[in-house]
Image (cartoon, rainbow over all chains, first blue to last red; front, side, top):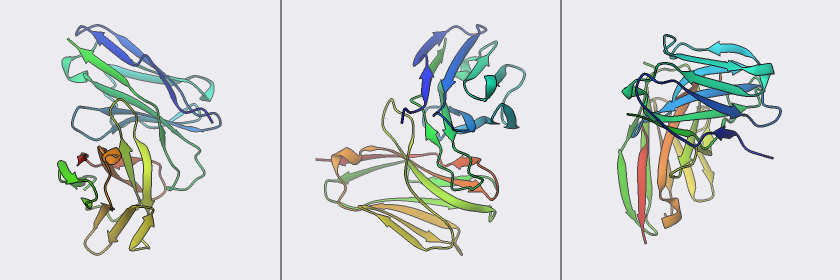
Length: 116
Length: 112
């Protein structure tokens, strides 16, 4: 079973520029998550999709961050304009969504963003 | 109330020793507590998990101890090996949702 794919793996941009990250979840996984992991901290959920609908985006800075999940499969996370404090690893995860809280989340390798 | 507090921040253990990482929570709505292991440059991967209706779960060298009354749980790594050197995160999920709240992580180094 192929894992969660993310691209690019690294991105360096200047502040006020825009950037986009792509995620392809494990086949058949209905739920997709985007997390932000700042150096030295645990992952923080930004947005959660169930199929192509948003379940939770309460911690997404909506003035600069946006995300979509096309046809309930791939997803794109965008930042526009980027700030210095957005420097972090952006992790994508997916889960089967069996209806149980024990649903395992499988993480991709992440995209390391550096904002100069 | 939604936080999961994790300690220590870093840990150095000799090969063959026991590594212990502790987590505490406040929200009694949490009903599932996974531990994730993360190697540099990789995403976190599920290591072991527990429900609050059991006090201990063991998988190989990894054991979770759970104290529901104290709202604390811990990861014990027996016979620690250099290959266990990684960052460990505890997490908790709310009843009825898939949302994970992660601890701040513990960087473990096992000396050969």
